[in-house]
Length: 152
Image (cartoon, rainbow, N blue to C red; front, side):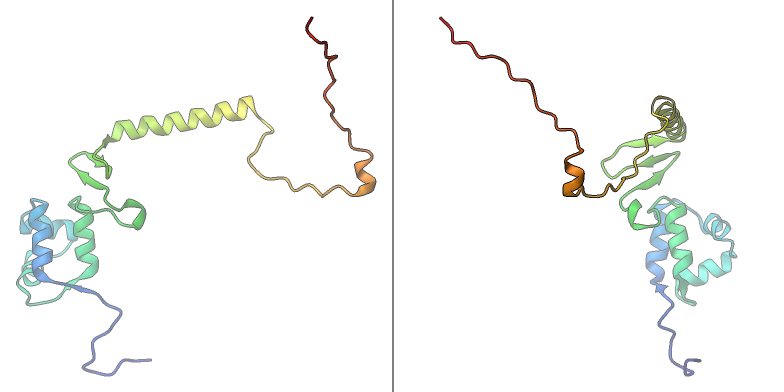
């Protein structure tokens, strides 16, 4: 179904030019660098920032990710990329080599788990509820009673 002429499409999101310019400057990018990162011309970028044409939301979101202003998705909320480090919400930085070491630690743990517990899996097994006839066959564990002696 085509939309009537003159009515804007509600599915598109556009960004305020000042917000776009602010994110570019926070990332310490020149117009040329930002244009290169977004694969557009410098003229297009300057048109976005001056308000002559609308800033596409996808370009704004990509610029925020590439400048380390934010990462995509709710799981990465308040995480950021600054320099060569990934910063957590509590202020801890992770370098690339640290994350690579973490991958090795997890893979070693998986290998040890498979070696030490080869048939153990974390899947639940559903057992049928024992019937009265089956209860007679089940072993009953009763602890042995110790003889109680009174102290003299």
